[in-house]
Figure 1 (cartoon, rainbow, N blue to C red):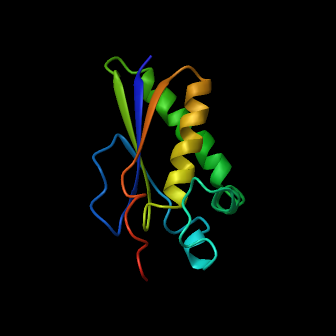
Figure 2 (cartoon, rainbow, N blue to C red):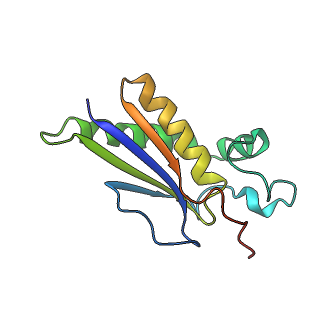
Figure 3 (cartoon, helix red, strand yellow):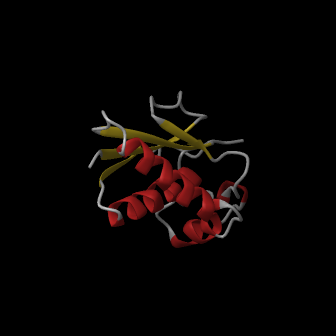
Length: 126
């Protein structure tokens, strides 16, 4: 089975990483950044997780992305699959999505690594 590397990132910090599949979470999903109580938190914090996972459409997107990974894994030369999970600042939506996708894929037998590229950077002021 292919090894899966998931990279969460923020589009406002640097270009998206090179990936087989990139999921852009900026427009369609609730942004915890708009709530001042969550702005300094990250996707590792329960309030942020609840806000992101409570957004309509996020769970079907997780399922569909896991299915995409499975399709890539079944290809003749898939030894490593890279998934990019991006939001504006790389601290909230992309982190939750990356962690939940990793959990799903591990349950399906994949070896998964997760890197949160921008989680440690300062909150983007916008």
